Image (cartoon, rainbow, N blue to C red; front, side, top):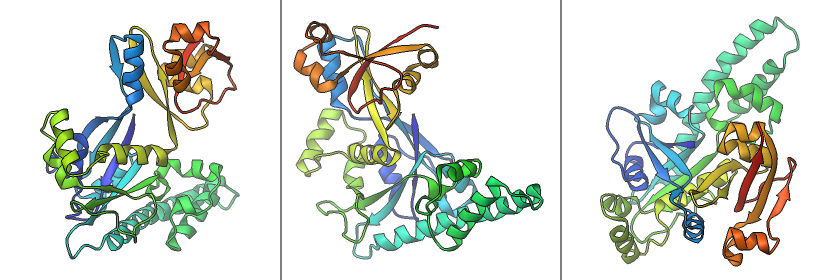
Length: 325
């Protein structure tokens, strides 16, 4: 499960967004967390087809961090997140969403600058003048930050990024920008491409409703994709994740894995024993399985492929792992 931290300037509406996204109200004074289901209609389709007794969607955890970039505690909590959702206010006549985004970005750069400057001094002291990979990586990061550049845009190598993991830089994290919109408006053009627009106030009103009632009300307002869907899907893209599925009589389940992962790694997402004892994976695409009508029909038609350890998992693969431990 991936953790996404909500961050924004005061009155950006991030706590309202938290309520809208998670159907849980933010509690003052402490970080509020809520686990939300990742919407994926393929799970229900497979469960119906295979008459599964249980359905399990992928999940994501949202954290509304009080104080955000204005407190050391908030910064420390944000460093524990896999990705950040930067919320900007785009409602009201005095809204300046691009300026808010610039302000949060500057705060995150300054926060990283403080830890990197300190880490450089410590690393240089340990190295005692000798060549050191961590000193080089930290020095490059320091120069980028002092040049007001995000670390993810600094051209760091994978090895250099690895050297920086211990200090968990915020500007190396994937970001999603969320525009908190007024009813009937769209994302302002001055915000970056890929910004997700959410009518947070309207969606927060539906948080206590039954799903069908909430859906009907949102449809009346023209909200065709709930804010949760948009933010989660954008976060998945930012984290470079894909979904594969498992299905059967007992359970149909969606699993997350990084894009480019090979079959044993995907097996490990299910259970470490499956990765350790991986033999092969029996794979069929979701579309092919649905077209066939069932796993049994897919087998009879020869649609299920046998893939080995070098197979790169694709979005929507339905897998059955064979293993021995």
